[in-house]
Image (tube, rainbow, N blue to C red):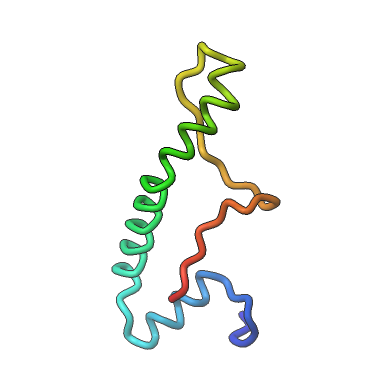
Length: 80
C-alpha cells in the first residue's frame, strides 16, 4: 500500500492509526454515529424526494432505499 499522496485506502489509514496508538474501534463507532446523524438531518429532504419521485408514480410503495453510486455526489466525507 502506498503511504503518500492524497488517496489512501480506509484499511491503510486505520492500520496506520492503530500503529500510532489510536483506538480505531472508537473511531469507527464515531463515524457510524456521524452517518446516522447525517441521515436524520436530511430526513425532511428525503421525504420530499420520496413524495416527488416515488409516491406520485407508485402510491403502493411505502418505503425506499437510499443507495450510493459512484457517479453520484451522495458521499459522506470524514476528515480524521
